[in-house]
Length: 235
Image 1 (cartoon, helix red, strand yellow):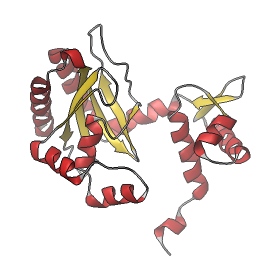
Image 2: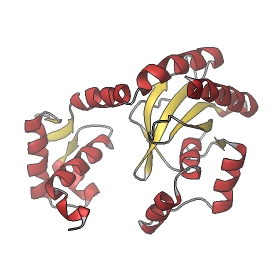
Image 3: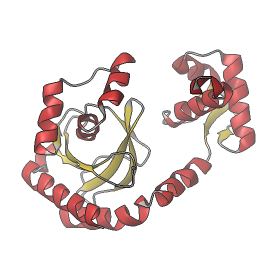
Image 4: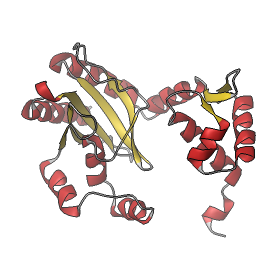
């Protein structure tokens, strides 16, 4: 029997609801969430009540739903189990302090880029991007993750209708070892990103540095990021 036949579809659907809740910036009504997910309202309501009962979601008095703080705990433990929290955080803090800019670590999560660790800039002018934020594949981090993704992964994404950068662009990123974007993710914001080899068959990570475009120094940012990744991979 194929492996897919043994999957619990009800569990998969509840996990999809968790992803949908995470994609909302504020508590959301059942009807709106059903519209975004393209599912039946009655079924979604049952799934949400299941998540509330299990402690993964909360319900407001106005019958809107949002993630509970259990998701924060699980995300923290995931980083610790992978050994990334202990290895990455001191390096990120030092890099942010030395450069004065925001630095972040992200992974490819389905069709988005997910920020899993971030140290904010102490500058007065800065971008408001938090852990858990999803960024488009067009971002510098997204371009790096796509450039170093396996051909099987890219083919699967293309088959699902995801628009990918030209193969020549991905090859250029692999050749030079980094990607840069200016004002593409957010107007006035520029960033550089490099891949991180976490080892131990862990998924590909990317380390990025972002800053307002008016003070973004591409050469300096790339140099600092490459040095940081060399130190991380040597740990």
